[in-house]
Length: 74
Image (cartoon, helix red, strand yellow):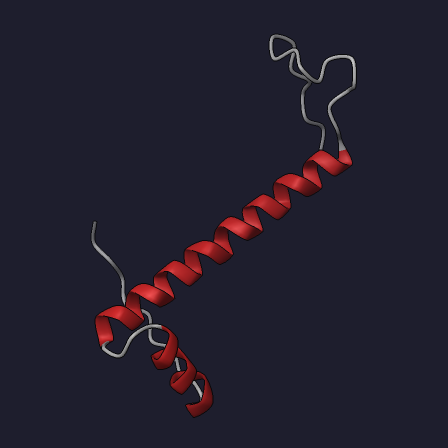
């Protein structure tokens, strides 16, 4: 997989905290940031899914019957 570069600027306090948490060294920091971004994306996707279910919950009668799924109506 070809990775793209992303240049971000951090204030001194945030960089110091990042170095303390992510183990000193460029590779460890980069992996920490990649994981944090993936986690934030997953959380946003899960939140969107929860919101969709909140707006249109499964009916109680068919909740366990996967053979008759309801169409989602946004």
